[in-house]
Image (cartoon, rainbow, N blue to C red; front, side, top):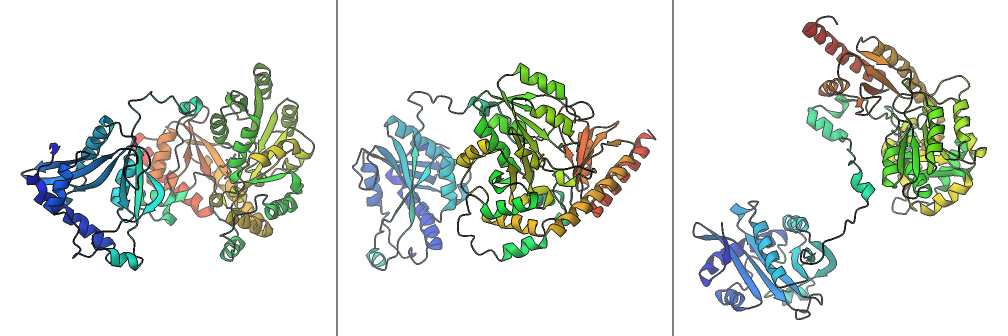
Length: 559
Ligand SMILES: Cc1ncc(COP(=O)(O)O)c(C=O)c1O
């Protein structure tokens, strides 16, 4: 189909197309646009369009019928009363027949106008779209148009009466700066380390999974994100139901929450900072400490946010892999520090995600002697049941280079509300206060976290259930000859998969509605990680694995 300039012979078809616009307007704003309105689209009016040297009317014709048109006009500087003081092409009307919508005609007409506007050396393209015309708004947004805050009203033919009644057409003025192809090319604006980053793969939301698998959410066994299967204390629901001040910004210092955390942990409030999850605090620490190129030592396999936030903050990632049993290579870390004088931060996760092993206190003391900031991530510390084990939160009072992070996601079942905290030395904390977003912890998250800490019984009961179930899960997984579970102190169990692909196993479980985590990473690419759920989740997993294992015996024989 060809786009060509209109002639008077096209007027009848154009008038027909305008009826579509009238109908749309009438349907959307019946009190404003009546079908009886006489909007001037007479042949004389259209002839004026053709006669106007500054304007251009194009049509698309098929089988002897005009199926789309566009009318645009070039305005020099300030000749138009409502336009900005620069030259522009104003698109007055574009209509595509209903049976041709979605066929790409609008795009072709738009391209035509863009080329024309560039030849005229116009600074911008503009047009007006009604609020209700979301289809058109979406189309123009895709073309790079942005909406200006200014709203306009433009009376139609017989509108004086309506204006007097205060009725207005609400339209949005939208601008699109023409692509600066004729001027100098844009420099590379994106930071090189961001360009080099692999895009983050977001998890598939629960409801989407449920739709994809054709299973109700309650039929899905979700053991892939170390969430707390019991959710928050009922006190949290009660508190949130009573929330009165959701329209007021939260306390930037999260005083109530920090007081509650201080009472719960014994860490002075002055050393505590709350965050939008421990994730935010990982990022904040690096933002305070790193200049581009500074080093961050990580001990993989470990939590993925350490390399992620290092990359976002232009740090140099220095991995010191763990030993085969996932214990730390302490000497390797010391070596890395002397090899990389620009190393500033060391991340240590204990219990470590993804294997659940602990860092020995002796190793930690040795590493704290290094000239580094040591960030100990204790997201899972509440599930440790070793006699004499204690959190390292209190160590922050003793070691000037220690930060300890905790979260409400695992202990309190608040992963969806995003709230975590950390204990920090004063010299660091004063800078963290300066750069954190003022309202990082929202009102609901803060209330929920405080309510959780007030229900110590619930927290203790549910962590005990999780620990008990961890032991049962560990044993159950060990009964399968193709799984080798590692001992864990967290709310998950890592399993080496023997004699078959871990990824395939993960995918096969997924088909049965059981979700576990697979890592495409050195050291764990032959493993799956299973979060500890309720007893019924373990039962469902074990049942599925048993069926798979039986099926394999039939297919492959006893291996
Ligand atoms: C080791 C570790 N640290 C921190 C987090 C994140 O905690 P939050 O949900 O508070 O951001 C996780 C979450 O999985 C984790 O595994």
